[in-house]
Structures are given as C-alpha cells and as structure tokens.
Length: 391
Image (tube, rainbow, N blue to C red; front, side, top):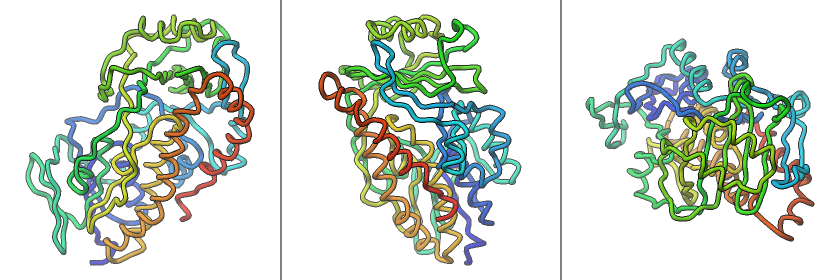
C-alpha cells in the first residue's frame, strides 16, 4: 500500500470531519465520512474564524464562496460591563489580514458547514448518513467501524465525532467530564430589529464579575450572534439543544449597561439555548496504531478563546499532510500528533485560564485591565501566525 491508495474512514461530518476530508482530497488521498444523523444540520450558533483558520480555508479554495455568508469585524473590543468604557481593543479588518496573511471572519456555523459540504460533494467524497458507529477495532492490516448498517473496513479511522466522542472512549476509556461552574447561553438577534447605532461592526466582549457577554455579526451582517457565559451552579446539562428562558437571562445581567439591556429586550426568545460547560483534561495520547482523534474528540475547547473550530480546521490540514508524507499510515499518525499536541494543549489551557480572567472583580479586575492590550497582542500573534498549510 502506498499513501495514494490509503482508504480513510472519517467518523463525524462536523467542521473538523469535512475539512479533513477536503484536505485529504487536496493531497490525492481517498476518504469516506460516516455521520450518525439522517441529514446534516447544525444548531444556530456563530463561529469565529481567525486567520489561522482562514489560511486553511483559502488553501482549499473556499474563501470566495464563504464570503457570501460571513461578516468581517473591524475591531475586537473589551468593554466594562457598567460604564461601557473600553478596557482593551485590537484592530481587525484589513489590518489583521495584512499582518497575518489571511482575513478574520465571523460566520454562522450552518453556513460554514454548507460551504464545506458542497465542496465535499463536488470532490466526490462519499458521506454515509444515518450511520451510527457503536464500535471501532483494528488489526495489523486494517481498521474497522461497526455500525447499524454493518461492518466497514478501511486503512485507518479518524474520530472527528465531537466532545462526546465514541472513538475516544473506545481508545482511552470513559473520561469523566468536570463541570466548570459556567453555563453558556446563546441566541441570535435580527439586526434590523435593533435601534440605530446600538451595535457597532465589531466583535465585542463585555466583562463583569462572574460573567461576560460576547456579540458579533453573522449571516453577512444581518444577525447578531450573542453568547453569554455565566458562573452558575446547580445546572449541569451539557446538551446544546436545551431551551433557555429570556427572563432568567435578563435577571442574570441586571445592572449591566443600558446598551446590553436594550439588546436583550430585542432578542428572539425562540433562538435562546443554554448548556453547561464541562472541561476535560488534555489527553496524553490521541492515536493508537491505525486510529486517531481530531478536533473536539481529541482536545475539547472551552469557548473562552473562540478557537474550537480553528483548532479542528488546523488538525485537518496537518493530518492530511502527515498521511501524505508517509507510506505507513501509522507513522503518519505519529507525525500528526507530534505536530499538533503541544499547540492544542496550550490553547486548551489558555481558554480555561480565560474563564477565570474574564470574570475577575475588584482590584484583580483593575490589574487585568492594565495589561489586556499587551497580553491580547501576544495571544493573537501566538494564534494567528500559525499556518497549518506550510507545516
């Protein structure tokens, strides 16, 4: 077997799985995707695509199509929850594209998946929907998935099956998730319903004691995606499809600036969901012979750095490059993990640290505010300079 005859099985048709299939095709490698749902759909949530992610999407030739759905914020601003004073800000737009060689876009997750899925179909990559994988196995020459539709043989398996990954569980056991004490709320607000000048063309983060609030445009600027992160005990449901109560959310942000209160008043209660945020320790190892993990199945990210999708996209590019570089896929998986694990572990830890930093109060918050501009620039350099297409 040469690397060009490699037959790869990808479990999961989320962002990571689709990008990986496209990156493999770019290298001339065959793959097929197995997805448990009868049809592909994504819950309505926004995704921030920083330059490290859009470099890969540009490599795949998708940026032109994706631009039809995205919004390019002009700045990243941290605001004080009470007086709306700017704590820190970073220019985005053309400046960020010139500096890092790729744009920064905000997009609705369903729109990103749509663009990826259309390209997957265009490339002739097979997607098997309604394929529930209940086990994986391997021997010296093949890897196998065991599904509700039968047993499937391939040369290797990529588990891109998300935070509740069956592949991770089969490889490394059932790691217990730890509740972080934070609950995330998300909603979409039609921009044309809002009073003029209430929101600016920026990615905005309001910081306050024990909670923060993120807002940015999606769907070509027609919708405002809002994510509210609150320290909240007594509710630990990790299901993303749990409905939220708008009156409860308003009460949680009572006393915050009038602009944010107005935004909540104009929100669409039907788009409000909430879920408890759980943390998982970084895995010591991702791969076992012919089976590996990718994206949230390998390194689930808390949403305090907006890098979950970007890390999965980077994974796909590096994994394809590693597999194309070795005739033995097992060596390719070792190479992939060696190139990715240090970075993703660093980003996992940074996101977890932000969960505490964003919610400081009193003197600790004052000290944080003094260094945020400097620290923010360093973090952006560490994240955005990375180019997964050239490693």
